[in-house]
Length: 287
Image (cartoon, rainbow, N blue to C red):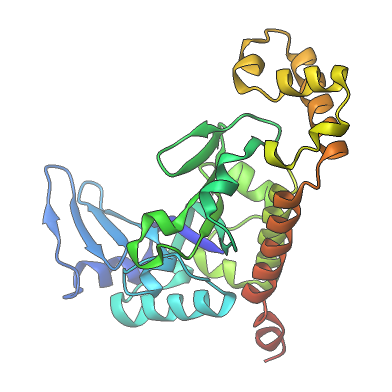
């Protein structure tokens, strides 16, 4: 569930990085940098500072990919691996930014799901090469194809839903105050991450025109729906209040005349995947 991290290194871990023979540093004018199994370790000399950023999920998978499940237990193992291989302790990694997300296999091509998403968190998403994004000042939301990203997962129909926190204020509001990476081991943090992701999925609006029962659609409703489900029309509307009101009317019409099957299926699959991710928490909590 946790994936991308950006942490400042403190304490003994800083010295361990400097003397780690597994890290092959490349020199730059103002820094040294090493890449290791999906992580990037950067060291600045004046003043002496070090940072670790990259995918803790990919690190657990030896740098190959981050397209499978990443469970609570996987995260525990990744922190142990970080200590054993690089001498970096989770308790000495000051969290600056990180992202949470879930990879969900569908039973149909993931692009069909992505292409029918109209709104995310009540905002029109920006189209990217392999998915969609919505940008805010303190965080961003991305929905994209993991199968397209990695050839070995081609045909697996894996869609990823993620939130990347760029500011600690929003991270603290959604989850809790997190100072160091080892604090993410708290079971309550993982429960909150799951709740945040499920809440996000509930705010995804689909307009799948193939699902509309057109023969039952009244003329007035059809005019409203096709006008206000059109992204170009929505962008042209200068009145924010009217835009919000008409988008809601279009969505209400869609729900009235469709099964909304993609939304229901995605929520069910996300819920099942999160249960799988959290299945170790009881055993860990009682040990």
